[in-house]
Length: 312
Ligand SMILES: Nc1ncnc2c1ncn2[C@@H]1O[C@H](COP(=O)(O)OP(=O)(O)OP(=O)(O)O)[C@@H](O)[C@H]1O
Image 1 (spheres, protein in one colour):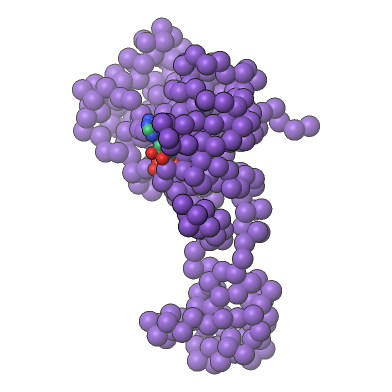
Image 2 (cartoon, rainbow, N blue to C red):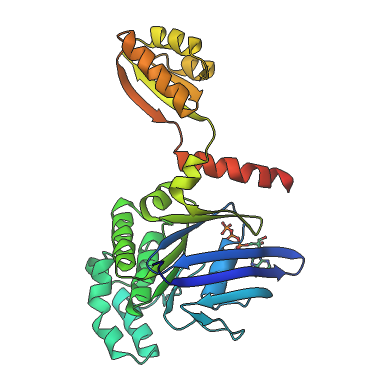
């Protein structure tokens, strides 16, 4: 049986004056899924996340969150936590005091008892008693996530949570989000970082100029891809170049060859690439490295976005 939907949005529109920020958005996010929202600047990601957090109401369309239709009144729907445009923090309070103030605001003892655990989960235990105004962007993001964790959300909404994170911070955030999803919390996050989305999300929605241009599993997005550029390093670059030039469906990038004679960059579909590798091996040439120049997800994203951008 399919998991129940945490978010069911149909035909959502939102305008700011003459600007159409969202133009008939459909979005279904099942319970326990980490769903990525991607798109160029101004695509409408923050506006959509704001609707999910109850910071604004849609002009038209239907939105159901955690099984409840969202009323027009502005308020975070029950069970939803997160932030857009960076977390709201008290700069002169310490990390721990920030979380305590939040718990007190909600009059919730259970939240107070979860403060140490939330700080630990996001890797801020060592700086728990430092003031937030000395925090880096990545530390503020992690404190914002800790604040959201206190609410024990069933839907977590995060606008670019990867911003400013160092590798250790990224590891903490990924671990927290993966664990939450395994426990049944749905997570919707926006990001400009394809590596994050590939590591975290099972499905993504790509927005461009307020419209959905793709929504579905990452594998489907990569599979719908066209030709990709691959870096090829072999034991005999000159012979490999001659073989590649002679192989149907392979286009050799001469400029890349001029930059580094040891590396060949070829553009191809996967079947032509398979053929080239077989021919190299038959000729006794060792393949030492073969990898796409940009990830299949990033290439697919750019291929989908470029036509929308040129229409503007
Ligand atoms: N409060 C507002 N008043 C006027 N225009 C707005 C407002 N909020 C958003 N917009 C406009 O709506 C469109 C969508 O903006 P939004 O911030 O949702 O995009 P985004 O995808 O989050 O972009 P980014 O990647 O730059 O954060 C943009 O054209 C933006 O200028």
